[in-house]
Length: 158
Image (cartoon, rainbow, N blue to C red):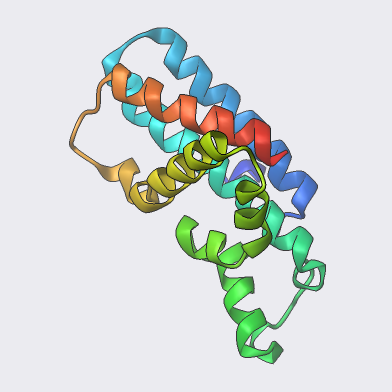
């Protein structure tokens, strides 16, 4: 039995933001259990929220990539962007394709800019989809910190 939920889709920015909102709600629900055994799921989903938001930003910046049927026909730079938006989960590489994002952060008051850059870099360099397979168990304290960073970034990235 094949369910719609499992179908591969090419989402547009508004759909990616909707998915980000739903997974954020899921991460908060896991947080609200207070159970350490839910911490990994919370962290995984919180990172995925950021991934969806960054991909939405990338596709908004490069709208021609939203409906590409043959990425091989794209320029090398656009093929890289298409791959980042559709086929990979490398948050740092996506951020590197969004120089306007770093400029926006730099225009914030110095302390806020430092905090946002630190949070963005910490999440982008540590989170990977491979966490879903981890046998290591994080604590709710670690998960709460991770979700708090994502929450702040999410509000600012909207």
